Image 1 (cartoon, rainbow, N blue to C red):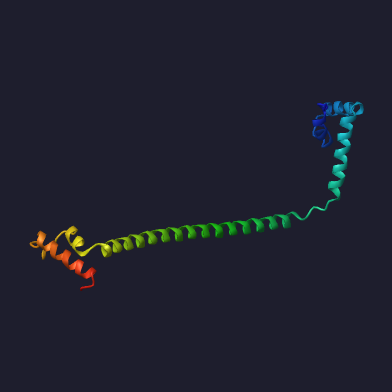
Image 2 (cartoon, one colour):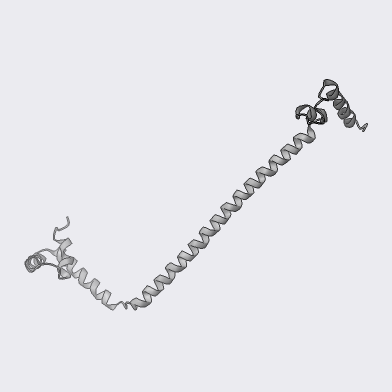
Length: 151
């Protein structure tokens, strides 16, 4: 079971407690081995920290800023590349769709017999009077003779 005073040992060691509370903790440490061990651990940790050479703050901050700037630059380049890739993909989809529609339209017209094309398209002014069955029959005959290699 953890001693309820243990979490106050750090504040005692750092000198953050009021005089009355500090005296109370000192008396408690004399009787509680768990808190005494915690206080000793804090003392050893402080000694280790004093031995470590702390780099110049300016150099550390400068190095961190350079890293941050480099990271931001790489992120902006990556974002630009993502946008360009998306635009290129969109253009390819649109162009592919247009091309497919044109080919489908051309294939339909090419595979459709002439008489069918003529009979399904609205007559122009030139053909307005010639839309009779006889006219369509002539187109059918022309198309059949072309398909049989006669033309």
